[in-house]
Image: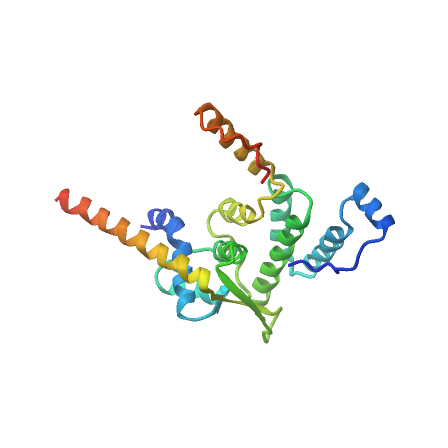
Length: 109
Length: 137
């Protein structure tokens, strides 16, 4: 399942991370840890970081620097209005894709 | 993440920057180098390997490149503080991570310019020429 999961995750990781952030603000490491817990065990911290930089630059999240006990301040990401809009678009697209795939599977039976 | 001041530049400085490129970018670069020197050895080795790759395939000079190296230093400082193993930062395929990272800073990346050039050449060939000059990315 490993390789296939990684490939499929590529197109959906952005939506997954936005969905996580719609629940509550989080910093990078928390997001990676949550994904690992949920069974995406091969996910690289750097991949998540690159994605967070991307959604920040595209204005989908707000960023706040919060002092941390150890090391530099942490960047805490929260979903903003534009991000919410994008997430809704993601779910609409996802429903479309899931529906079509289910249809294909049913027809193949 | 512009850390520059908004004071007007002297004529001399304006002239100098035409010759040497913005001094602020150079300052940001030196700050980045100083930050990575402080990292534990394995993290420093990793960040230097990434730096080498980005020198070839990342954005050239400029504010975008300066932001990129600052974000890179942020990641490695945080990872070193959290004790995140190097392999967990990079995953199985370091190139994939580095490419995803570099794509965020596409301005001045030669590969972005070439992609843009290809796209407009195909537009012209397909008869969809919009009359626009080649857009610079």
